[in-house]
Length: 372
Image (tube, rainbow, N blue to C red; front, side, top):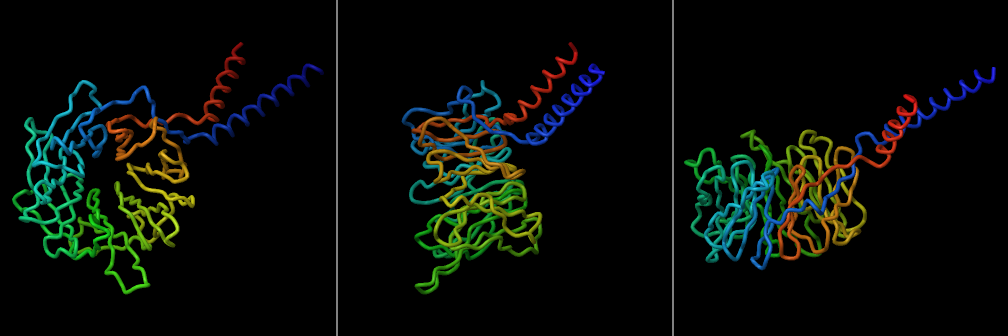
């Protein structure tokens, strides 16, 4: 009788332990902490040569040297491949990369023009995209074959958005969006961005008489629909540069002039409106995004980066090691940044949550015990 009772208790104990393990595994399943391994850091450029971070497309990196007048591209997936230089017109800036193309704008001799280079070719030869003789052709973005940029050739008081289809170079550059107001205090906007057929930008309306302050807008346009009109995604007292990947847009917004929050918008569900990404009460600045991952700096965590996974809205701190990081770019599992005058790249890796590791480890020990 005692043996039966003891056996029953043992079975109940094992079943209870299984229930606990199952619950722990369910809590941890699918959750990850993201980290950067300092030992795997890649130094792309060091020394006093004024390298500046640019952009990533997966494992392909592009950056520029403003003093030497060079743009560089390098395959991070191939550790033996050297950086390939592109000789520019003189002072490159705002380097972006997508697929076979790197784009930038050059501000040599007080003029600003947009250039592109096909990096799949053995000889890296820049091609000028902007046809205006002299104007503010600045802040390009590229997705596939389509390049867009800020341009004020029509009216110096306004910034239009112009584009160039690299698959049809004979067409030349063309006007996409006309008459986006910008003030001298906001020089450089509207900062267009593009992913696939979707174009997004910041728009500031004409300044009304004081004391009223204008509201600013995040706009989007479906370039795949020739008859489409721009869509207003969000409105705030102030908004920041929109970032887009696929149909997800993220951006800074201040709705009451007290602090900057981060909001998002799903272009696949426009009726749902904007959703909060991070609103801790501290100033937050979006650095970049890739897929469901949004990278931002927060006043709550000085000199540190935060990563939000939109799939489960979990937040993670990314420690790059040291302070004074800047010019951060993110693509898939790669991150690139400038720090103390040098340029680095590394992978952002997921690691199983501690609870999940404990659960599966305990389950393995239990199985070993049962085999004995």
